[in-house]
Image (cartoon, rainbow, N blue to C red):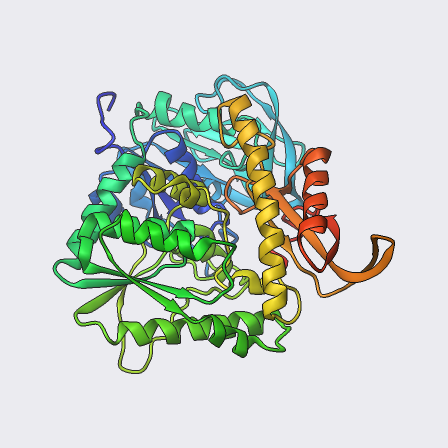
Length: 530
């Protein structure tokens, strides 16, 4: 296997409904090895047909002894490839191979200290005492024959185990999350030392693969795409443009709730750089009328989403030969909509604007080439595809646009006010991030802001300007540090940056007399306010 290439190396991640299932696949790709998710319902023969170099068993919320607990085909352990299990993956490995799992008196959640016990290929090069991330109540109480215990905690007698001869390894903790100090080293040990793989996979490979998949699926048919101008839909548009060119029609529904200057930027990129049909639907006045007096955020989302599809399908039904709908769905969208595709169930955090209400008699097959990827991976794809930086590094932006950053009713005056304030926030933090990039050489340095924007709350505050009392709106600045939007911490922006943002907004935006900074992490908050 040492001579394998990017094309013939593949790690299968078996999903048992884990919160971190896709994150495992992503961490493997980060290390230069291609990976993809398969359901735990897949048979060993189906997995064998995928020609995996290794298999990783994800965590999951169930107890292995529950009546409806997900299981794995026992023949997976007869395929002759290394297998690594995390959390539920360790437990299912243990019971399948003859060990036992018990219910512990005390669960372990969050940061936990483990102690190594003897030698371990998986833990090689890591300290005897280290901090990992746990999330369990059940735990292995008796390891299968041939396994040795390689680490313990105060409450978990089998924090990790391995059968080096058969190349089976497992941990009760989660090496894939960044809270596990040496998780990356453990994954490197598994992929490169144990499996003998090479770090040869890169985003160029996935572009070639996705383009080929789109061409094969579409054939000579036509594809329509609702282009929002955000990173996700733009990358899908660029992928489809490379794959099928003029067979793609991009429909840009302008609801008037985009950020300052964005409609013009989107039209320029997709009419001058990419050879696709581009339809610009001006629906600004229709949206304002529909949103008049509406204050409840979910109602805003429903109105905006429903009207989007009305505008979109009005265009679609005038086109001949369209059989496919392309969408920029990415993995966090699937998590937050509760629409998991691979066996687990997630709680719905917010309604998802990509749920499609097809009109009666209308149906398109979906093309969702990004649904296994996180935001920063999508950005990397955009760069490979040649999208300009102002698209690739554009801030994540909700489908309902500024309507859910205006707390309370939406009107033209508030929309204009927020556009101007938001432009200042982005301009100043863009400059701050650029300075960090020049200093560190990376756009994802420790303290660079990952997403940042302005919020207009439904309150007014007293102020004084030019010796006169004012009673105007405040602006809340939201800026977070994150890798993938699954978790986020508030950005530790320098005081001078915050000060300049405040001075500019109050001085340049009519109707604003106060600026506040949101210092709440996700969780417990979400990144957006509504």
